[in-house]
Image (cartoon, rainbow over all chains, first blue to last red; front, side):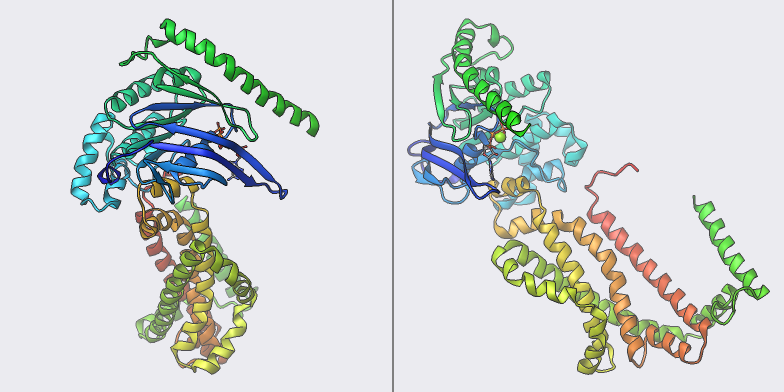
Length: 279
Length: 249
Ligand SMILES: Nc1ncnc2c1ncn2[C@@H]1O[C@H](COP(=O)(O)OP(=O)(O)OP(=O)(O)O)[C@@H](O)[C@H]1O
Ligand SMILES: [Mg+2]
């Protein structure tokens, strides 16, 4: 298990000068992201916000070790990341539960694959299912759950292996507003004093500010890079239901949105321009 | 539905019987259903058919087991090792393009009149179906499921067990349905071309003495056997794929 690994040193996630390019079908190269520097200290909650297609998932995949940067270096706790990052869990943008496993077997997966006995893994899973409010759904298959329940299962699946880093790619964007607020609250409760580093990706600036210690703004693609970094000094524990009225929240929101707006409209304009060319 | 289906069967067989008796249909080429069932009954009750059926089943089962096993293993390996897939692709396409029936005479020469020439022939039929379906099944596995399992610490072996095999199972099962039929086809065609026993041999014998009733009886018995086997495959499929949402249709 990741937690059993040697003492921590350095940043939980450290991307230095990372550029990722993809070959396109026309034989050219497309720069998804360029010169990304990202440093996440252990125990910190960092969000990345950016317009669609700006390379947020690409950055997370590099941190996870699922993609290797074309240029640059990825380190985790001082060690270069080769292959998948063993210290990290990943909550994907899409549904990633195994459809042929029941909820409890999905949650147990990380433990059983690490050699924990099935009985032990199941009793640990039950504890987690209780925590995320799914203890009566252990024997269901994923297709028998609602979207929010699937996300809860995914949270349990990611947390049960006790990782030092949590990579979350728009985990709640598919949920309705109410469920989303409940899930955000639950996430904060789990995270508080867990000592885990979180890299959280979202479209939603409100969500980013409410949850994070730091918000990074990613520029418009192609070849986007970090264009702004903001420390969120709203004291914790935070009450997510009222935080949007907090004067500090409002001020930060205004400041960051001013920057993000520029990038979002750039993306929008280039999309319109492309459409114009095509027409 | 069942009622209408039964009614349809009765109408078709009844019309056949009546037209045959009236002399509209030539009884020599299309023997009366009642005569066919009579022959089936004689073959079964006298025990004549069972040794032949047993020979055919042996051939079909061996061809199916070996063909499916080798097809599965090849499919999984080639799907996971891109280099091998690219290397083998033209050869596999070549062999697959070959109409398999032309192999039957050569296998007869190589392996003799016994069961092994039929097993070899059935193997070439089963192997390619299972192989291509497994290859496609493994390659079409959702990327994010693989990534998720890898992030949770899956080794290559665990990926195979927890992700690739279950995910490819729908493809593999659709190929099993076809290949069960093909294993039997392979055995019967092989026997037809030269053998000392088996259903194909029995049908060829009946044909040799212009016993069309015997030919039809042989066909009917084979049909029933394949149906029963397919039913068993269906059972297994339903059990192994029970996690799938029930399609409403
Ligand atoms: N495997 C790939 N091959 C080619 N291009 C890719 C690949 N993966 C991503 N891209 C391109 O890189 C860019 C960034 O993609 P990415 O998925 O990281 O964006 P994103 O910020 O996560 O977007 P969204 O908010 O819509 O999820 C996109 O333009 C995408 O088309
Ligand atoms: Mg994305």
